Every structure is written in structure tokens, then in C-alpha cells.
Amino acid sequence: MNKLLLLAVLAVAAYFTLVPDAPDRRGAEARPALAAVADSRSDAVIEEAFVNRLSDRQVEGQGTVVKTLADDTNGSRHQRFIVRLESGRTLLVSHNIDLAPRIDALRAGDTVAFYGEYEWNPKGGVIHWTHHDPQGRHPAGWIRHAGQTYQ
Image 1: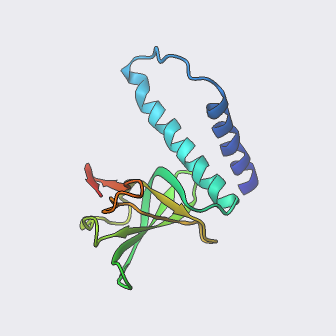
Image 2: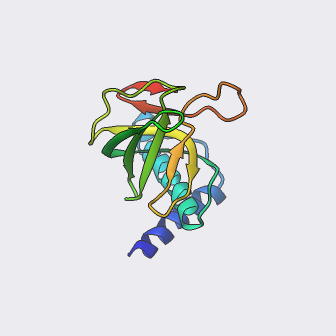
């Protein structure tokens, strides 16, 4: 079942990568469906990174918080939580709260969007660099929750 889901996700990703974009002649009512396509593409990129054990990949995605964890206080402090993607894959998000604001209102069941760096691990992977880089050498990441962007 997981292999079939992976193949379907990769086929959709390949289709949208290889087929040239046609001009969007649909009205505004069609735009919400495009957001779902973007989420599917993001899930496919993360799934490909997981399956191929790839790291150091800038990814954007969205998911539901399934669990908040205690902060990691070794070295730079990180707020940690687990997100389930639409595909079912779970990721640990490690958000540096020495460089970006803490998401105080975050609770299980909340939806978050994120942009950061994916690191492979056998449990699904970790998203980090969800903040600005004070030295400007790394792409700035972010987390969006309840209409607010944290970076």
C-alpha cells in the first residue's frame, strides 16, 4: 500500500514537473484547488527525500501538529513538534527559538505551514532552519501558524 501511494505521489509530481504550465484562465474560485496541488507537490518532494535518504533539501510544506515536545535546550534552544503531512508522513520540526520567536499558542491539531531544510532520519525526517540566518549565508526559513509568520 505504501509503495502504491509513493508511486502515485511521484507520478503526480513528475506530471506537474514535465507538463508545461498552461495560462490560468480559471476564475478565482479555482484557486483554492491549486493550493491542494501545491501541498501534494511539497509532500512528493519530502517523500522523495525520505525514500532516497536525502538531506540538506530546502522544502516547503504544510501539516497538522500531532504532538508538541519539550524544548531541546542543548546548545541553541529549539521548540520541537511533530507534524503529519497530508501524505501521512510525519516530520519533526525543530524551530530555533534563540533566533526566531516561539510559537506560544501551538497545540496538537493545529495546522502549520513551513519552509526550512529537510534532514533525513529513519523516523521521517527533521525540518530545521525555520528562521532567518543572521549571517545571511542560508535561505531564510519560516513557520506560519494562525495567520502569523515566525522567522
